[in-house]
Length: 265
Image 1 (cartoon, rainbow, N blue to C red):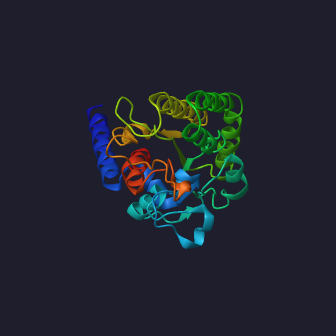
Image 2 (spheres, rainbow, N blue to C red; image 1 turned 135 degrees about the horizontal axis):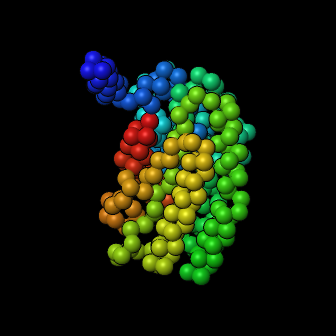
Image 3 (cartoon, rainbow, N blue to C red; image 1 turned 90 degrees about the horizontal axis):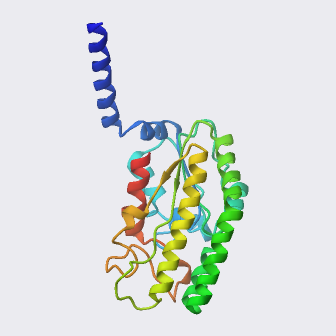
């Protein structure tokens, strides 16, 4: 009995040491089986610059968190199919090709465009408080009624094509720091937009958990770096490059998203 306990203790220590040296089981699995990065503009890296020319309108960036993770961990293969503007249907129809039984790690942000993210922000920037709140309520109703089923379809397809992969679903940050002087949107609008982000994240996290996936909450890492914080990792309205509005900067990708993926993987 005494020998058995010693053997168990030694084995535990060796496993812990191995995990520390390899960066954890998830990273080792990804390096062995490869990494596939799916999703929308928050995963492709819109707003961070350094876009890969061959990615065209998808605007995949070398400063996006998937690219940074792959550079740091050297997975055996890296496929970057995330694309600006993608909705759940786009992931299903055009991004899942690289997935296989050999895939070790999958990351994804998706759902914001389905819920009308761009239209919500346009309405809130250009119209009244009441119009903004009304549009957000419409988006929330969509998140309640329709989005879970669409996320289910995507997550089920990922599992079917990559049954051995660790899947990490990352959420969206809150956009605004509240309770501070901020030129632009009213406090009412800013609170409502943050609430909408929370609403979407909560719904996404639940569906991810139902599929046994890991949910990566970036609201913690972006705290203190919202718009109006004085140290924002998010673009506000970019009138001369409107597509980058309300997207993470390069610092948001490396400081907001990358640590969450690294910790989860």
